[in-house]
Image (tube, rainbow, N blue to C red; front, side):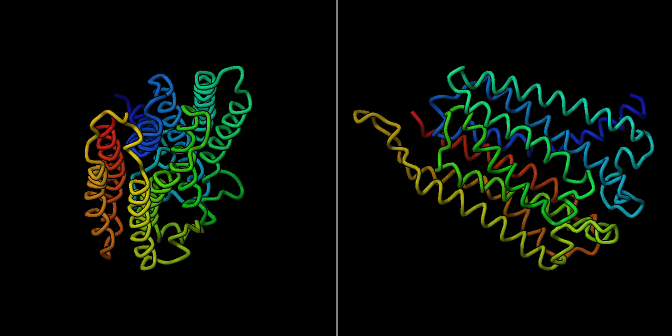
Length: 317
């Protein structure tokens, strides 16, 4: 494998894809979607989410490099443009190609989800898709990127949580189910936790580069408290959803449904997340010490989703 090929694979940052997958899986396998689930819609939604995540990764590489944030003081892995192996022109072409492919995937997804009599829903999802592409690029690219103004966490909760879970469930149901707001917020808070660890690691370089992340604005100590609140809020939202979930309604009057109290076992997936977060709350002498916990929360968030939906699917008829 050539040096350039390795640089492109690194630029894609494939390790971030599990976090993108979690929202699609959660929104596709909740009990409210169970009856109308469609494998083709799920596959296209997953590929579209991957496209958006990779687009965001490439845009972050380009935006942080052009603003001087990716420099010799950066703690995280060396970026593609920073290494000098890939040029800015090549990265721009990659951004355009990835954006175009993601848009095409989104169009195919909308076409499969909605019929000719659902033009209004289709146009709404198209607008949401364009907004997602815009958000993926403008995190660090442009004159006023929102990631440099302390708004990254808000957009992460919005797009990784609300848009991902409510959006994919809308593709199946053709309407917004208000009950899904709680799991959507939960996953959004976990995703914001991943960003928060990343920004805690990079706080010094971000501050010196005038990248005003929320961590830079509040400081390292308050960022750890904020992290704890994000994780606890995610857990609380899942608990509220389970508390209100009426699994008995999924069974006929003559059937013998399982003990619906077992639904709370779905929260067991939070154990690795909580263990990981306890380690994050401890002050670190070296910012690089945050790296394993960044990966841990990303994979832990996906694991939590898999346990959550697996338990609920087990209880369904």
